[in-house]
Length: 429
Length: 87
Ligand SMILES: Cc1cc2nc3c(=O)[nH]c(=O)nc-3n(C[C@H](O)[C@H](O)[C@H](O)COP(=O)(O)OP(=O)(O)OC[C@H]3O[C@@H](n4cnc5c(N)ncnc54)[C@H](O)[C@@H]3O)c2cc1C
Ligand SMILES: [Zn+2]
Image (tube, rainbow over all chains, first blue to last red; front, top):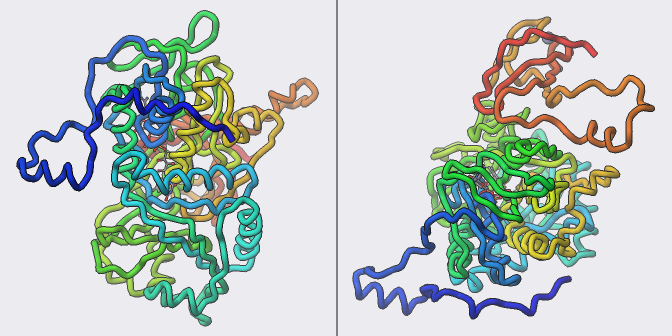
C-alpha cells in the first residue's frame, strides 16, 4: 500500500476551525463573522489539473491531490451547484460486503477513511456506524451471501449470521415474512461495519478542506466538450464560460461520463440508468440499523430526522431522467409492506431518482484512458461509500500517472481480455 | 410507466416487456476478419446518448416478439420508428 509521508498541512490557508469554542464565541457575536466555507474566485484560463464534477468523487480527489501530492493548481468545475448531483440523491449506505478479492480491500479502506473523516475534515458528517442486516428469503441468495461472507473474512470485513429470533428483536417493525407468508424469512446476516452519514456534508466537508489548500471550485460552469491537442493528448475543455486549458483532466461526472468522452471520440463501456429512492414523513425512532432485503429489492434506514429512507429499484432501459416511474415505485412499496406491514400508515414525502453509469461487470473504473492526460473515475453505481478511497486512489493516479495498489484492478484495460470483476452487489447501494 | 406498442399486439404497458438494451451493429458475418479488440468492443460497448436511442424490447408477457423502438433517454418519449426485427 502506498504510504504518504508528504502532508501539506503547512501549505493551508487559515481555515476557520469549527469547534464548541468557535461556536460559543460567534454566538456571543450574533453569528456575525463566519467566513464562507469556500471561496468563489475568478476563473483562470489554465490550471495544472482540471477536475470535472463537484460531487463526492471530484471534491475528494481535489482534497487528496492537495493533501498528499502537494498539487493545488487545481480547479473543480461543476455545471450546477456543488453537491447537487448523485451525492445529494443517495441513500447514504456505507458498507464493504462485496464479493471479489479485488473489491473488498478497496471498500474496507473506504470505510476506514470514513470513520475518521469528521475529525480529519473538521466537519461533522454525522457518521453513524449502525450496522446493516440482510433479511434473506430464498436459498440461492443465502448461498451467495454465505460465499460473500467467506471472502469478506479473508479481507478483514465483518459479516455474521443472526438467527431469526434475534433479527426480529433487533428490528421491531419487521413483522412480515412469517412462516405462512409468500417468502418466509429463512436467515439473516449482520454486517457490523456498515454505517450511514450525512451525504451533503461529505461534499461540503471535502470542498471546504480542498478550498483551504487553495483548490478553486467553480460552480455553474458546464463542460460542453473536451479538447484534444495536435499530438492526441488532452488539452482542455470548452465550457459555457469559455475555454480552460489543462494538461491533465479528470472526469468525475457520475452518469454523464460518456456524454463527455463521446466529444473526443472515446467510447467507454458504460451505460446510464436511473436508480430510485423515496422517504416518509419523520416518525419516532424505530429502526437503528440499515435493513437490506435483497430478495425483494428494497433496503431502508431511518434518518436522524426520523424519516424512513427507502431505496428502490432502477428503471429498465437506459435513462438520464432522475425521477421514479409509478410501477417501480409501487413495486418497492409493495415489497416494503410485505416485511413491514405497519408502514402502511406512513405518509411519503418525496421520491426521486439519479442517473448513474455502470460498467458491464458492475465494478467501477478508476483509470487512465487512451487519451494521454485524460483520467476517468466512473461506473459508480453504489459509489457514495467509495468516495474516500475513490478520491485517494484517483488523486494518486492523476498525480503519479500510475495506479494506486487499490485501484489497479479497476482500470479500463481489464476489458481488453474481458477480465470482468463481476459484482452483482447486494440490493443496498 | 411507458406505453410501448408491440408490432403484433398493439399498445401495452411497459411491465409486459423486457428491455434488451440499445441496438448494436450486427455481428460480423465473417468472424475471421475481426481482430480480438473489435470483438471486445462489440461485446462491451453500447450507445449511451442523452437523447434518442434505438433499442430492443421483447414482449415477454405477450407474443414474445423482439422489436426495435427509438426512445429518448431524457424525456422517455417514444419516437416514431416502425421498423421491427425478428432475429
Ligand atoms: C437513489 C440512489 C441511491 C443511492 N444509494 C447509495 C447508497 O446507499 N450507497 C452508496 O454508496 N451509493 C449510493 N448511490 C450512488 C452514489 O450516489 C453515487 O455513486 C455517487 O454519488 C457518485 O459519485 P459523485 O458523488 O462524485 O457523483 P455526483 O454527485 O453526481 O457528482 C458528479 C457531478 O458532475 C457534474 N457534472 C456532470 N456533467 C458535467 C459537465 N458536463 N460539466 C460540469 N459538471 C458536470 C454533476 O452536476 C455532478 O454534480 C445511490 C444513488 C442513487 C441515485
Ligand atoms: Zn406482442
